[in-house]
Image 1 (tube, rainbow, N blue to C red):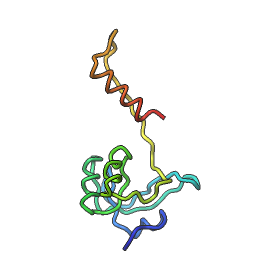
Image 2: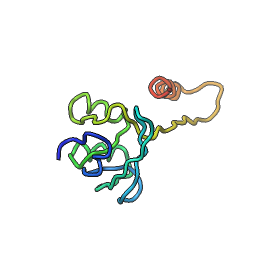
Image 3: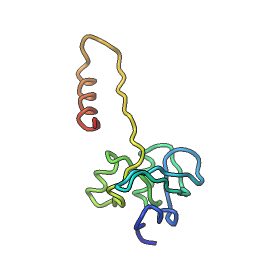
Image 4: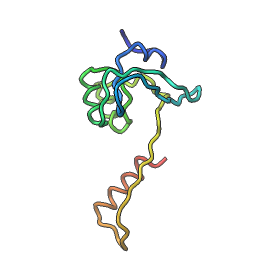
Length: 120
């Protein structure tokens, strides 16, 4: 079947998705031409991003992984980034912790990591 050349080609490929029940759905995708909705019918639906990564590495189909989960596999050639100028829903990350005068070092290091790698 080869690689899809554009987003509408995804309808003709095996799709692996995260969340919800299997069946037709619409992916909202932002790209250079603006936001579009792409209709897909996942052949497999999982409830965990790590499970999605494992399914994609196993050749189950095409899916959309967060960049922090996919980067190592893309760099090593285990996964291929098909649409580098497109992205799906951005998610907010909230670090919640109990208020104290001083943070435990492990919490401070973790919050600093989140800020450094995910703050836009």
